[in-house]
Every structure is written in C-alpha cells, then in structure tokens.
Length: 243
Image 1 (cartoon, helix red, strand yellow):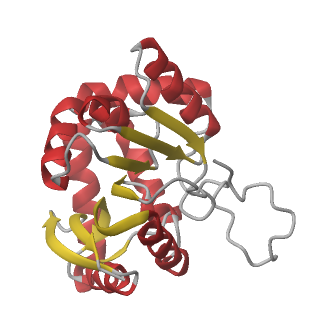
Image 2 (cartoon, rainbow, N blue to C red):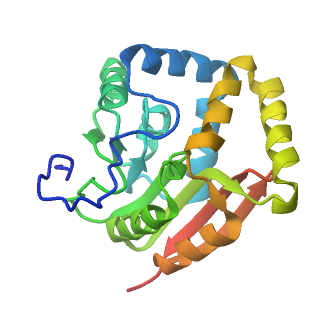
C-alpha cells in the first residue's frame, strides 16, 4: 500500500504525523529496548487473547493493527485471523516487527509504513481494527479525521477496539490527579517510565472521555462498550454503523 507521506502537493496546513510527538520511537536501539522493557511489564499473549475475545471475529476475518509498533499484537494474533495489516509511522519499528514475523515464519501479516492520516487501504474493507495507545499522538482536530478514515477502512458492522490514554478525572483536581497517576505508574512499572509519562502530558494530546465519545459517534461508530480505568485510560469496543 502507498501512503501520502511523500505527497509534495500537501497543503501547508496539513498535520505531519511522521514527525512524532512526545517520546521518540524511531531508532533501532529504542525498538529493541522497547520490546525488552515491555516484555518485562506486560503479558503480550494475554493482552492479545483479551482483545481477540472483545473483537469477537472469526478466523476468516482481516484486521488492521493501526500503530502496530514492534508487532506485539499482530504477531500474537496472526494465528487467529486470515490476514493482518500492521501499520506504523516509524519505519524502524515496522522493520523490527517484520523481522520478528519472518523469524517466526508468519506469512499472513502485511506491514506498511503509514498512519491514521497517511495509510491508504487499497484492499477490501476489513472486519476489524485494533488501535492501542497511539491516537493520543494526534491533536483533536486530526483525531476526528483519523477516526473517520478508520471507519472508511471498515466494512459496515465491522469492529473497532480503541485503547488509549483518555482523561476522565475531575479537571478541578488536574494537578494532583496527574501527579498521582505518574507516581502510581512509576511504582507499578519502574522509575525508567517517569520521563515517558511526564513527556506524554507535556507534549502529547490525550483528550477527555466526553470528547472521545462524541468523536467516535461523529466518525460513524456506535459505542458498544466503554471502560474508564483509573481516570486516565479508556477501552472502547465500537461497531461501524451501516451506511
């Protein structure tokens, strides 16, 4: 698939999603370090099985893993679906994921360099899309466009699983809420996460739950289930409405 990445005819106001906000993930060293660190604090296989269950799709289904990173979900889910399209704005993360898939002799994943605003899905609409901890890299204006583009890649009745940093805490207590969240996550995941967490709030674009819900609806999704976790995370299962 082609992306719009090198389109010289872009208007000057177009948001460049290839220029990563927040923590920079675009180095071979970081990709390897990212995998090793997250394998210590996350159970990728368990996460994948939970998401497969939530999506409720069968082995004939095709899905897009938007923001696939080093392929944690795509590689673990490959045996459950007919085809997976792994998409990420980081070439080095994609290359790392492709190498891991090749080493595991997985043949039903197509990896593509692109993102919410640049990936062009030329095949038939997919049955499901998984999007985990990546949408917050876009400001809200571009989130809305991103969600609309995801809906266009899905068949009617197709499923979207969206997990991200979404704020549901009381804004009147924003300072103590953010400080408390960072402290809790550092205790849980290690001191090396502190800079990443602080950078997230300083440079990235998490939004509020009431905004996210409205954006999903306006993009053409019905929200089947929403879970808000610890005031800072949200998990949505959505269905694309019939056109």
